Amino acid sequence: MTRMIIRPSLFDEVASLNNIVNELFDNTPTAPYRYGYSTKSVTLNVYEDNGNFYLLASLPGIDPKEIELNVKDKVLTISGEYDYTNAFPHGENDNFKTHLSELGKGKFFRQVKLPIAIESEKIEAVYENGLLRLTLPKSEQAQVKRISIQTVNPQTVAVN
Image 1 (cartoon, one colour):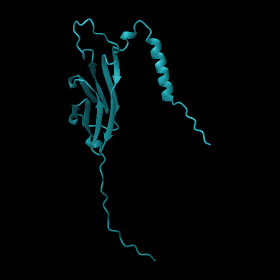
Image 2 (cartoon, helix red, strand yellow; image 1 turned 60 degrees about the vertical axis):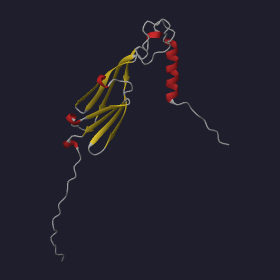
Image 3 (cartoon, helix red, strand yellow; image 1 turned 135 degrees about the vertical axis):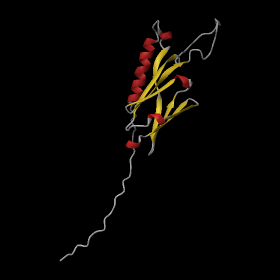
Image 4 (tube, one colour; image 1 turned 30 degrees about the horizontal axis):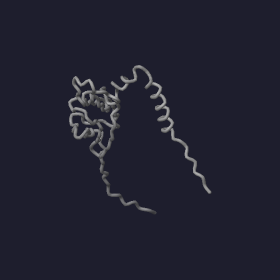
């Protein structure tokens, strides 16, 4: 009979340690305010074809006017601010209590180093349903070009 031994993954160990640390700090006087302001990383996918890079970034609930895009030296930067603190306006309601506030407000930031130069003036950006879609045209000089090879009629060589 074969026995299978399942060992915890490194991810499980880190998650367990994270829970212990959170429990430790949840008992401090500042615990209710700890989640108020933070800097978040933007999750994204990057794709490529012969002429373009395509980037899909998840930015749910972000006002597109708050998103800043910059390109410099083959590095694309996505940054901005978010504020979810007034998602449920409660006004002067004394009975309104917050039990958990992980969304809060803060900044988001992500940089992507592209392997080749892009045409920054031709970038297209569309924000829809919480997703930012970018089309980043590759620089003409950076694109692979096929070079045709000419053939020359071979001369007849006499073999003795």
